[in-house]
Length: 417
Length: 102
Ligand SMILES: Cc1cc2nc3c(=O)[nH]c(=O)nc-3n(C[C@H](O)[C@H](O)[C@H](O)COP(=O)(O)OP(=O)(O)OC[C@H]3O[C@@H](n4cnc5c(N)ncnc54)[C@H](O)[C@@H]3O)c2cc1C
Ligand code: FES
Image (cartoon, rainbow over all chains, first blue to last red; front, side):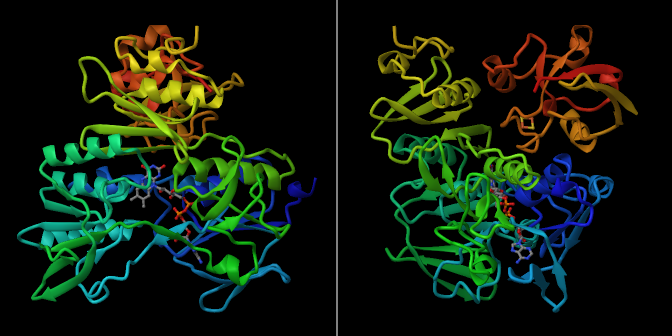
């Protein structure tokens, strides 16, 4: 078995959810050679989801949520090269080049280069002080410092997606006055049904966050430390801190330069292989085939990063496995936990349930005709777990029963007679 | 130091020690097979499912509503199921035995 050869080198670009889980999985699969992981981020690899959640509202942030303790990398002989940016891949010579010029050869290369926040074209954004994206630990620290240093603690968040809304909830909890400006007619438009958007809008209003929709930000004016965020409807909002959360773009430069196939991300097979036999790609940076939904998709989730990492590790060690999963995701805002399973895109009817006696326990079930595509569950682990089971099993449900909240959520409650 | 014994699906018994954080973190640090902790310990992923020994149940305590909702319809649930990211490592659980559910 070639993978047992100890003179082989596997290089991983990106030390986050995908890259790090891949490195450990590769060892578990029996890779005996070197594993070299590179990341431009200097921090020991950490969980990203808490950056916009608990971490942002916490008072004491001395403790990062590490993916694994340092000792585990040492004991598994995984070499972390942090603060090191890879600037080129030579797929013919099978080498990578680091900024500074040094080169390193590989037998197998794994791109886990993820994504970066989109910087929207807004006049004055570039020069504005106290404007932050939120993707890295450094960003979180920057936001907290800026907030601490400001007297009025006025935060304007541009973008009402998950990161924008979580950031709003966390900064509100940390004592800020928060305004969210969303360009579309409703928040979370890209990812949920209108029912969910309404739920979250109400939730934020109830918690004192100004969540405004149809607000297209066109410019930012700065004078003496305070910024004014201006929308195309001529409204304006003063801000001490601005957080921009309008989506991400995939880090595909290396892949493009190496001539790998790209299409809304790095295109990979169900075993995470690119069109170069020695190069794999995993996580947020990939455009991959989902067998359940029968189409190519790009995901931004921990689930996809971790599961694709395992698939690539197995494939590289000669244990072919097929990537075949139902995507899942979660979001925590205030005391509300949202859990999503499946892909709702293409739905043409939904059923919404509010459980009896508990209006904070809700679920939205997305169907295309009679096929259950996805479930969004709010404080409702049962709907989430059973939704997962029904989607996986392609279970046809009795919608009249599902609609009837006097019937509790149980494995057999909604089956056809 | 609090001692915890994990028994994996392969029937391997591993004793680990810790004095802070939650049990999932301790399991991940010690590479316990079947405990992944994908959500980082916020009760969202159920990749940290364990079965508590009946005699230890009272010391470990019952799950919250959110957690029991996640467990109730899990394929591997038992009446002693817990998501171990929701269990703090402290003296009260010294010596417990946890069977990894996956
Ligand atoms: C604030 C926030 C909250 C989130 N909340 C959730 C959540 O609740 N649930 C959920 O499922 N997902 C959540 N996500 C998404 C999740 O974090 C991502 O899907 C996940 O991080 C993807 O992992 P990845 O390893 O593929 O990519 P990334 O995490 O983007 O990591 C890629 C790494 O590659 C490095 N890199 C890129 N190019 C180079 C180069 N040329 N040289 C060296 N290094 C390079 C980068 O520095 C980076 O560290 C959240 C994300 C953010 C930012
Ligand atoms: S680690 Fe995700 S539920 Fe425990």
